[in-house]
Image (cartoon, rainbow, N blue to C red):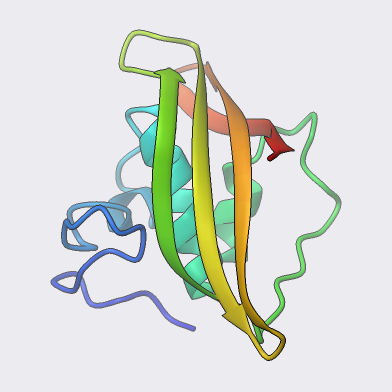
Length: 131
């Protein structure tokens, strides 16, 4: 799948255009300013199949050797349920969310509380607890 048109709604369901929301984070022209914005960009990366962004935004101490996305899974909605820290002046943050998907097996929901760290001004996904 390719990146959405910059004027189309962002897949992360923020309501903002892709070109103003996750697009600049995914293409590397702007770092994610908050843990939530990085989490939204990661959801968008899953939705459009951007493995390079998933790898680049995953902390090197917890990143898997490879990321294999299932082409039959379509991620279509993200609900952010809670944000703890992770702001402009924080170095750690947590984001709880529910991500909705469809596959040949039907609909599904992934619920997770993710932890993020900021090092040298750059947020990365550290790990998460499924819930």
